[in-house]
Image (cartoon, rainbow, N blue to C red; front, top):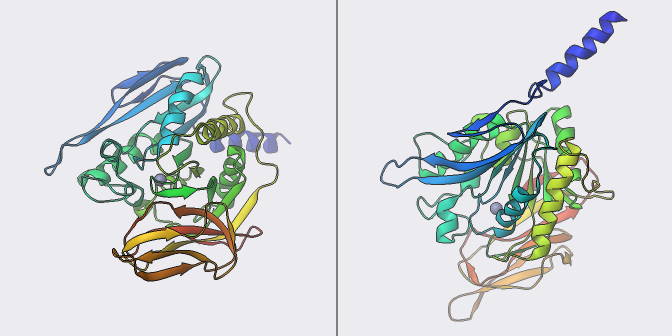
Length: 359
Ligand SMILES: [Zn+2]
């Protein structure tokens, strides 16, 4: 019996390496937050190879009590505003005196994209920041931003919530990703609980992510391939700053903090999740002017017209149809379209287990 008790105690210790008996100061870059305090600053991505570098504003809320380190990231895509505005509000509402653990907020991960108001791509190097993780210390500016986030934030965190919405051209209904690729059963289950805790009922099961930590591609997958539960959130879109999309993110963060036992109260997890077992981005076959035929949240049958594209004089040159029956998770809501870019994301309701997702 004694042997068994010791084994259990050792197992618990091994499972929670980040939780020490006393809360310590937490430092990122040249910013240190003492237990029970909030500190903010900038990560500096130095100039290199002809670009001017950039800065990444962040906040450390270091609780007075020990607990996990939760990373919250916004602005990986710079024109996705509700996550950025939600973190402004969350920063002002977490009480470090009662917090157990540490919250690290990245307020705007992709400052060049934010300042130049670009969708998808960096105005400096043309790359999508959420496709270049884990980044490189000597790469393009996007790769150096990714590297700074990987080494300063993800490697320090015990869990990650990466906050997105429809980009400025995307009309989107709220959903989250449960990302399981390469995760052990235990890690996959912790990711599932994280997704449920956020409180958005539409959950895309994503089993199609890379499993190599050195080629993890996505920010959330950077955490997962390093053994940490993570999720991506989508709430809002079309460059808007609507209050409901912001409040939904605030509630979700509170739910996650309750699940992680960082605070005693928070919203309940989703009681009746809608698992989307198959989801597919429909890419544009042509360049021109896009006319959507569906709206976010619409239910479509296989073959339903999603929209059409005209040339610049008004002649229809392409029609896009739903690849299978499902729900429109997002559809492009502005005219500009280039061949190969997404025009819509269709999700199919399914039981857990048979997911094939491309995004
Ligand atoms: Zn995004």
